[in-house]
Image (cartoon, rainbow, N blue to C red; front, top):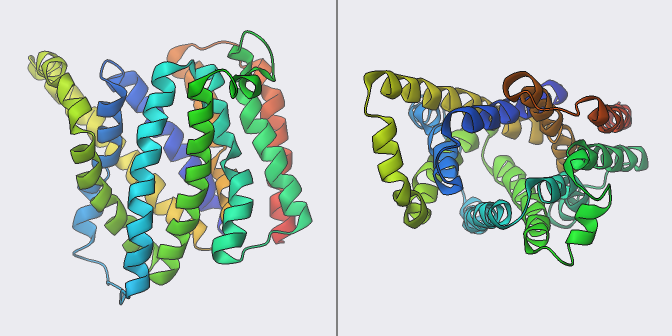
Length: 299
């Protein structure tokens, strides 16, 4: 089965979730937004667990889960801290480096060794993803790299990218030890419980804001619709992510999924009237060439 359409749809769904969160829930803290992002898809994924076949789960699956869950939460906390203390334009580009790290973690954990053409494609995709948001930086293309040494937020986001390369590989290992559909439903149902509990000291501070927002019936219905929209887009992302990653090398899949940065730019222009779109077409070109090389390497 072709993995590429699932990876692209995972990218579009991820960008859609971010756009909805920004448009409808940006008045809340990043912790509350993270809790919404993690809990919403369980509306659809948890009930599905009662209708799908459960694979036989061995001790290796639970050991993988034991490593995966804490890393996921640590990455989320560091992510929130990074965007809290530093500008987005010098932190977010580092997420594009996850596929580079995944070249190594995929080889170390799963023995995946991409072809040279595929590696070049991954690197070009990373360069494109990195440069998409760089036009907002006041001091040029290399400013985020320089900021590693002077901005704590940048160094934290680089750590996040590295952790995501490990969680992506461990997620694939868990999928191979179970089944894509089962693990997508099981794992994110588990996250929907654990993450809000871990982040409760932060998002509970938003209770008054939430209560004030829901004072009218219009605001209540609008918030419910927005929450359901996040649930649909994020559940779609989860299912496509794990299905795609079960079919191809982690570095390849994550490279394609990082085109979500491009789709976020499109949403930014349409929904939030953000500027400098033409400048970002260079980054898009790099990403398209990189993805083409990845596809050729798998052909």
